[in-house]
Amino acid sequence: MRLRIAIQKSGRLADASLELLKKCGITFAHSRDRLFSFGRTLPLDLLCVRDDDIPQLLQENACQLAIVGQNTVREFELENDNSPPLIEELRSLDFCHCRLSVAVPEKFDYRDATSLAGRKIATSYPATLRDFLSSRGVDAVPVRLSGSVEIAPQLGTADVIADLVSTGTTLKANHLREVETIRNVQAALYRNRCVLHDEGEALIDKLLKRIDGVQQAAESKYVMLHAPREAVERITRLLPGAESPTLLPLEGEPGRVALHAVCREAVFWDHIEELRDAGATAVLVLPIEKMLA
Image (cartoon, rainbow, N blue to C red; front, side):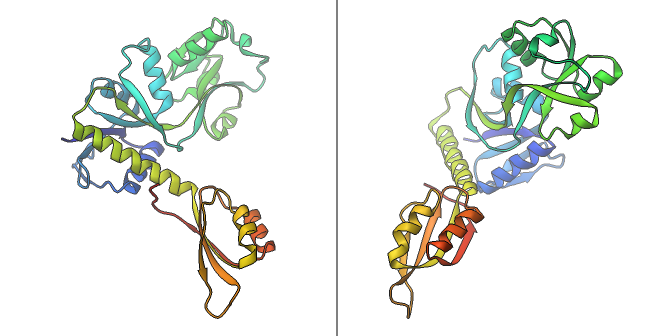
């Protein structure tokens, strides 16, 4: 049994999705137009499509899995009145972080959401915006735009905007300021809720375990150091998120050991300096490419 996974066909989300699948050990034979790719290492084929089309493809079981922004799926759910609930989020993927925010011209007098009453708001996510306005008891006019939302106030087609923001640089370039966060979002892995044969469910389970391993490896570091044996307990307490370390005797140095440990949290310079002050020497911090719990 083969499954299909859909991703955005181009852009930052596409690149990050392909990199994740590559780290999961999945390689593809690409078609000439690169819209469909055959999975070589797992029975998982790739569809590269517009991100706005992905929720509908997932809903109709044209693909069984998808990597797409939470904002896109939420907009689809609201446009379809959250029914039928055939799309399930399996994992947030910790990349392509951004936020859907309200931004206003620099001289706009914004106090709270009630300042938007009666205003025209340009956005690519009108359903999400309506949901936000309804929750605040505000009656405004969403103006749907598929692109270049940030220039709408300058063109006079809207008073303010609601758009995705990551760094805020584009807003500043268009003399806008961010005033309200509607929703924080990131990329996520979704599935169609339809029940699959055992092979299909096993394949999804395998993919999830590999993704978990990649994410754990990204956050973890392998630390090696030398230390006096009497300092091992103190040093172990200083290692962030470390499990029980491995101790090895040092040739020709009685009373000193080599300590190896997996740290499940980031290791910063402050940690290394604390380790040195506790007696550690030759401290080496290495990235971990793959890890299974």
